[in-house]
Length: 368
Image (cartoon, rainbow, N blue to C red; front, side, top):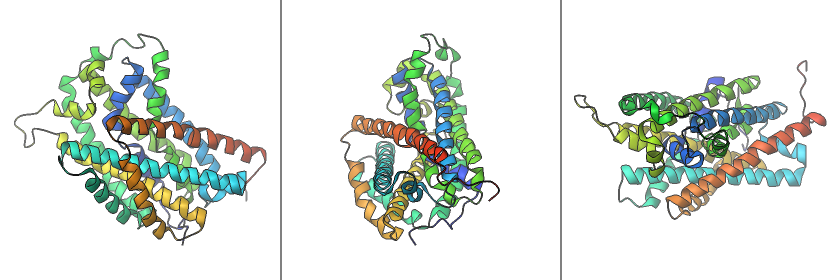
């Protein structure tokens, strides 16, 4: 069947999917991209504000989806804005998820090639991960959720251990003065924080799969809070250890921080390998859920079987992943995706929610 909303997931699994989606390449790049834009030590304030804004945008999406129980946004959008506009918007969302999955798998390939498989052709790494991701998503949302439940706890433990061990390099003076140049640098940094919190938009499909859709807001808030706390700790530790100038000069500042120390006397003296392996799994998680969302959207839009569509999207993701010629173009591509997210999943759902509320479209009363 083209719809599989009978494949239910628990509230905990929903939380895990949201957190794994958000914990993509952001931990590796966030300190640099945010510090570049803010140009002060106040990026952590931008991070908190950005997380709160994302929560509000995600709540709007959840409230909208709760008006159409058992349906994803790909299915009910036509009921709100009409067939033609709804179909065009659904296609835009499918293209968005294709581009985001391509971006994530390219970042994963870049990190793998730079630190683990030096000299391996880019296309070989990308293609390998793509086929593994295809194998996973053919099992449906439940298979994805069960894998994420394994990956997320390991990711959190490894990241916190690595950051804790790097605390000997941390200097609180590198995070002073707070708001030394006023509030405007903090506002400038909001756009960079919104990119790393990409992931809330998966709620356009998850409430349809939830056993208890009414807990969608709770799942979103918890699922967003976990990456927010991890990103906050990472930013503070990296900037506190490397200073603003050091972070801006580094492409992957978090990895550089972990590589900058070693602990003698232990079985393992260098810890960046563990962080790399775990974070490749984390970026892979983001890629797979994006791939699944794009396939599901196209299947529900065309009312066709989802499996052939999964195979059909592979070459498109592969081509888009190899389009950026270098790291600068790749990061520009990521910024573009972040900008699209603001309009497509930030402002547009708010407009849809207003329309459904005013005209009472799809409204479900509690006593029904």
